[in-house]
Length: 448
Image 1 (cartoon, rainbow, N blue to C red):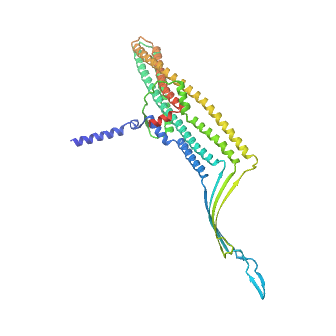
Image 2: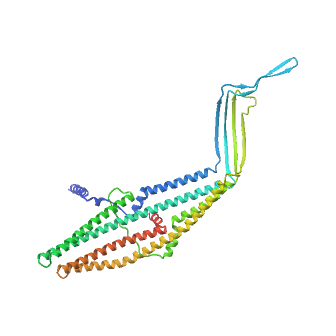
Image 3: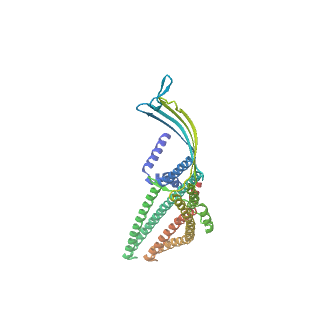
């Protein structure tokens, strides 16, 4: 008996799952879940990470110029024939001696060896290049950090757009329900002769308009969901878990400005670029200095037939000092160019600091405004709800006109939409302030 009951319960559970609407079994995502998914799937982030890998390779290349070069060589030459100089004769008392000719060209010859070379500028420009490559690596890491922060801000924006669109659809549904009730009440009053045909027609017109608004709200939700899927990389249906409302404590503008000047990754990038530009001037100017070349060689030689003067093995070292004298003004032009770029980076740095100040101030004013609006709109919504309930009851008993009901409903819908928009706008204002101060990604990574 127990076994049959167990089988019946399991079968019923499977049947309920099969018959459930798709949304019930959809994956649920919090904002942090969306962040993690986006970081894994976003192509823009992968591109920025490859830039970091390229910069790491550039650092390895710069380091390789400081290392000595070790090469080996080997060659073999096969001549058509061996050649000798003409034979000579030496006359001596009583006769002459014939001397064979010396070897001019062997029949075959082979050479091999190993060579070690080191070439450095006396200005140390190779070390400067290595330091530039290290700073370039750090710059690309900060660039990748900024790309991630921008992308996750877009994810948050799309997330709140979906929640806002869902709330707008709920408001539209509630409006349709209220107007349907009002239309039914108007029809009843018309039947008993307490209202005119105009009242019913007005109710039906308002209901049709509400159904149209609901359709627009549904389309807006579908578009917001499609945009979120595109940004995060989702393919299946999903549900969103709402984030708790952000606190309404707002720090001072000076505190936000101080944080921004300390944390903004784009400002740190320009700081690094300023250092790189200074080193670039030193690197280009180092080309005016002489370069020192040191080499050590081991070589072997073999011939067939072998000459009597053949040197079968050699080991030697060499030192060379090269000093550029005139190159048509190329070096002077390169130094001038590098100094102009250094000044340019300085101007960009100063301009960005001013821009950051404006961005933080704009985000601060928006945040403060949204905070203030929320309190007023909450009061407005409470008044609008009470007003509609009172007017709707009065209309049922013939104590209010249809115009009063429409006005009360319009006020309520407007208040609901405003409070919804203001709530999510405040959440986005908080996100915008975090991005403007450069702490958005830092907080996300710390939280996850």
